[in-house]
Amino acid sequence: STKQLLAGEPVEIRQLPAGKSVETNALPCASGTRILLFDIDLEREIERIMPEKAVAFPVPVMVNGELLKRKLAEDMLPFVDTSVGKVYIPGIHGGEGFGYSHYALCLQGQVVYSNAFSLGIETDAPVGYTVVHLDSKKYLARLPDRDKLINEQDVIEEVDELLHSMWMTHLLDEKERLSAADFLGQYYRKFCSNERLKIVFNDVPLLHSFHVATVDYYPEVPIPDSDNPALHGYGKDNVSQQDVESGKVKLVVTEELRDDISAEAWMFLYHAKGWIFVDRDSYLHQDHWAKRHLHTMTPQDIKVTLEGEQAPRMFTGNFTRSNIVFCERYTLEYNGESVTIDNDAFHSIVLKDGEIAEDRVIFPAAATHGGVVLQMFRAYDDCTGHQETDEELEIELLERFILSERSKDGAELLRAILSSAGTDYAVLNKHRFEVVFDSTGNPAVSQI
Image (cartoon, rainbow, N blue to C red; front, side):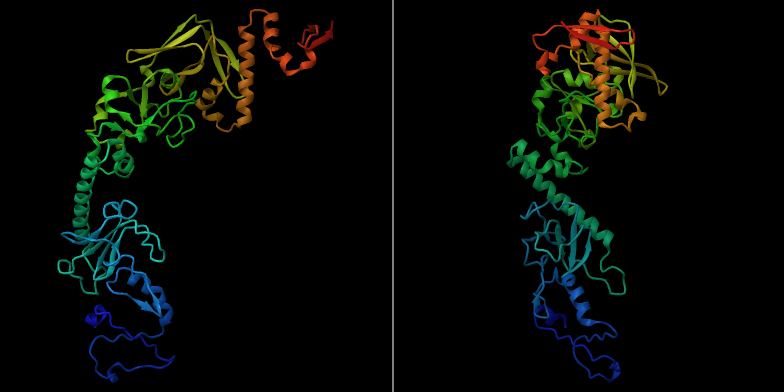
């Protein structure tokens, strides 16, 4: 009987010899419940089923001399009494993990509902999800002719409300106990996507580094996903509310730039001081303090001014083609702040009705590297099949073009081409040569 089971008394299970039938009405009367199973490998089925049935059972269960694991049983975890029954929450009551959204509901020692990925019955790993032993006086198991022993929808709603209340209380207590940095470090990534709980972060005077990024390297565009840290400094440091409100740090939302193929905005963020872009701002609660300080940047917001602009020259490489516009320097201005740049080129595209109306590369006087080719590659879908070696060759072609177009005469160009020859080829040192180019550009070289 159930009373005997809960008292820990042994239960004997016997298998009848194969082929032997039993007339149920011929069996002598006995107290308790008698179960007859036919045409089944009883021992194998018991070994398969019992670990799951025993995982939350209130008393030890032994099968064929082996004690089964009862990881979820009331005497195995530090449960606390609540309005729905006994509750264990990892992250609050000890253990590892943060069992907010994943839990197992137990009734009379049986798991009756679980949304956890796995109960981990066969492992010794700590329980990383919430476990609830429902109060059997409040929640009565329905008759076994139902497909569920509990009314899941009603019970789950009640349990969800309880867990929300318990986590909210815990987070508020932790916010008082911990420093702002430690509180965010321990809880923000776990709960910033929870619409009901992330309100607790609204008045924490730090913006978590999860949202924060800077353009640390010469930007290729479009900017890759935030999970790729190669291009910009995601997750380096939290940003203080004081620095933002004083203007020392400016926050810009870049969602509209995510697919932008023109580089003006990214070049501004690369060179400007104190500008930090905020990604995944949808995770911020609508009343978070940082929301009041977000600048929404679009490509059209960046004003470009060129100094010493020259007539454009057309560059045609193996994969890319654009007008190269030489200048002394250029200025990028946004929201009343400007940066003047003379050492980095950038690719500028103007779209009209979704089509490219203007395509040019701005090349200031002190810029020599052809890395702007990478921006040009990213701007066109038909360049997606290129290899890294193609990029290197295209950069070299552009650098040769720039050198040729900037040189005022042949002697200057030749000096620039041969500037490193003496260090690369020692045999040339301290010798004089005469170089004559024929009409096709082939050189004839003789030593003087």
